[in-house]
Amino acid sequence: MGDLVINLLASVIAGTVVWLSGFLLRRRKLNRARAFFGLTAGASCLLVVSRHASSPREFSVHRRDVAALVELATIARECGAHADRVGEDQPTGEIGRLTEFCVGGPGGASPRSVTHVRAILRGVTYEIFDEEKRRRSFTVGGTEYVYRPETSYVLLARFWGPVGGRPVFFIGGLTAGSNLAAARYLSTHHPELARTYGADRPFALVLRIIEPAAYGTDFTELVADVTDVAFQPDPQPAQPTQGTQPA
Image: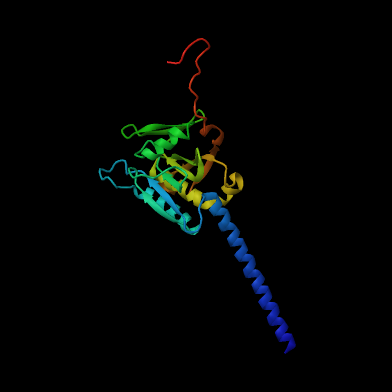
């Protein structure tokens, strides 16, 4: 009888240790994810998405952009937060007030993306999409990333506004499919990104999607870390030379 009690106690203690270790590990992963995304339990975040470029409907969104929003909303839910979808013409409030996921390159129909590139991602240039010529590209640090049927690209970036606060996650793809690829990459690889960039360092990454018609988003790879060239300082106005007066 004594041996049975001892064995039972040993089993309970071992089970408790295993459960507690798993709980602490899950809690640590959750806290790291929350810190990386700037989310807390019960918090809100914004999903900003561009309108379907070829649709006449005001609130139409490409189905793959919708799938990207689902991936990002799942991230928020796993962090204990909830996501609010915001259309391109709806007010989003000040940058940094809430974590923001901005989906859609400026070459499409996303005024919010245009603003982010103009104000913060100053080292990035998007070419306006030409549907007739099928010309879609963006340039970072002198390197142009051009859409082709067998290869597409997307810029995935995290940054903050001038007063800090919550981060913005920018997904600027050359197609809606590349936006989805970046959202899935972020969902899958955020633990590695957190180890590399922590919770407070901006980053800008170029991802390449290989043979999207055949593989969808399954063959997505990191091409370049362009953090050092994507974020350029705000150009300062020229100072008047000595003996002259500013206009």
